[in-house]
Amino acid sequence: MKRTVNIVQARQPKRGRYIGEGHHEYFLTPDGLPAMHFRWRGLLFNGSKMDFIFPRDVVQIGLIADDAAKSATRWSSAHGASLKGGAGGVVTSLVSAAIGAAATRTSGIKGFGVVYKNEDGILLAFMAVAPPEIVDEIFRAVPLEKHDKSTEAPASPEPTKESKT
Image: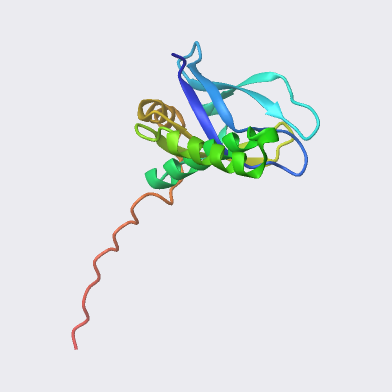
């Protein structure tokens, strides 16, 4: 079974290409760096197949709360199923979306968000889910200065001297 990173939400730029939603094959480069295969998506044409090497291509990375990751996974699956409703009309699309959302497996996944630059230098972002061992491997490889600091516990204040009166 192929190991994949599932991009469940992707920000689309007004111009330029972006990494789209869907399952992307996860692998380690010959240097042992975590990466995924992807194809640039654009308004008119898709680009060539490329490799997103996390330590090199990430501008910022952060964990996403488990409940938010599971919810995004369900909605992503429901959205995909509703698009396949096709000629059946609105009711069929809604039923397909509900079945898709209910059938989506959300156990054993961990969510993370990535900010990256496209080939035009525009900052974009995606939210993805993957098995915890893949997410942990990615986070270990990405330099700490690229990790989101907002999820860390705030530093405890230094004790102050009480004034005597």
